[in-house]
View (tube, one colour):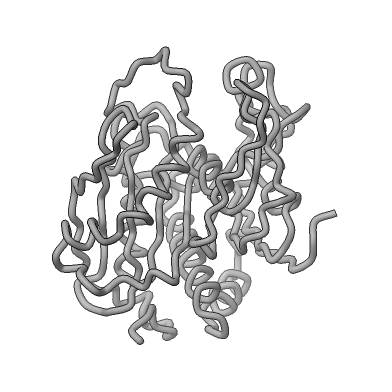
Length: 324
């Protein structure tokens, strides 16, 4: 089996990467067909898969298959196949703002990921260099900001549909690990009036059913005042309120961009820090390797490396017990 290697040397010698876009999946009933970017190492077999869900944000192209290059390139260079959809909330699509699911399309975002897993054969056919190289038994989901909300639903979190009052379960058993980056926290009295009025689906987010292993990454300066009255602590809710096994990385001095994970040198990153992005790359990659391949030491080694710095840039905590 070829898998992401265990040696720390891997992080110093990234592999060549191929990236193909757009890969177009027919999507009957969707406003437009589903466009993807697929990135993978040039060599290697039985490659694990990461589904990467973009955020919302003010930029035109970061919230699409063209965003998140610092993460997608790094993960692909270290042994993963990274699949990035353009969700319907992307500004690149300029869809009808009066659509019932607009502007965030919370449900269809999760359905996009399921569609990708349903059509891996078509993706392999479209990207000939990938044919026969995917490990379909090792699939993770990662998401930043609104993408973190999408990832949390796929990992088992639930909410109540504000239109019909039904409980929504978008959990995906084919996904066995996750990474939530600056993800939204709980609803209720944690939300601002703006969110309650404009994005009512956030009001009922419930992490008590999010049982799939996940790494939550939060910045201790990510106040997100337009979304929550709880300050940076809100973004730790997916860790604090979900059953284990979960891990939390708190990055010191980090805002919502976590140093700049959504793109290289983007203006909307108020806390730009190449060092911080490098830590996110390293920790998330190591976490997914050790979670998808039990017994591998990458995650422990990455934690030791973080805490051994003369001036640590963050801290890690973990739980394997149910949330109280």
